[in-house]
Length: 409
Image 1 (cartoon, rainbow, N blue to C red):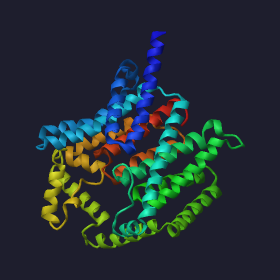
Image 2: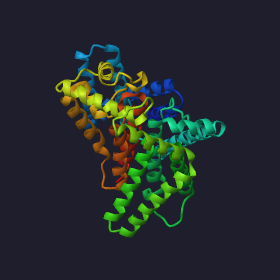
Image 3: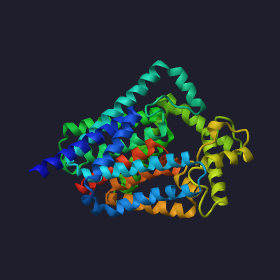
């Protein structure tokens, strides 16, 4: 009886900590850090139970190991430790989820909490737009977007929204228990929420979020086509195109964003890099990362010194670039190659495979989840910040929890 009460308390505590993690993700870095550490500490008390997930832990270990080892040749120990520390939170979040054994009802409650938090954060952006419409629209013509929570990290924020949409669709709209002719109230509410969030993504016009969204929609269309539903797939593609066309003329923010992206591309595709160029600066970051990798192919420069090497590259090749334009390569694999060499890239890639392997099923939803989780690692440095690691860890944890209950089977 005492053991039962102890296990129930542990599970409820992990549930509360996950709720706090979700709230902290958008509203408080301090709460985010405390809940992340709490998940890891409480999860460790179930170490015996966690042994059966050894391949997941090996995966996380392979992601963190190259960063830790590169400390042996990193001169900047402070920057190196920051890179290690932020990736350790991935371990603590995964440990917490694996130890929790959430029920189906608890998983749905967590997704509901997440949805409420995200919707209220979207309303905050809408309010900011309402009171500063002209200024915000002008900002969209110079590579800026409207204010968002998460410290204005619109990349990770829009990524979070798309992942939220994926789980809403799977757990509430097309769940196994909802395959009946009559719509349930929760399906109607979830459907309206998904439509609102999709519209908001176009209103926000953050490239990462829109890329993840449209890749997901295209995957659904291809799935319909290859499953002998050719007409359905083609109609869905037509719907995707017409929806984007409608959004373009409905949201001035999206229209201004696209105009700036086209203008920016016209410059950097000709080798012209102007100050404040969003994608132009990203291209430069990739060039810097490739150069650093070529010069330190075997072991990299150490994760603590990547930024210093990027600055050196700019001083030599683009001395006119501003300090805020000299950032880490916007590709996670390139960061690993620059920081820990080719062996680090191999470790990181195998680690991701082992970590994501438990999410694999034969359904389209797991394929979409894979792509949406991985795309921001290709286009951004998502594992180099607390928000990116937390978003990734949170949805891997929710995905594994749902898979254990056969929600994604």
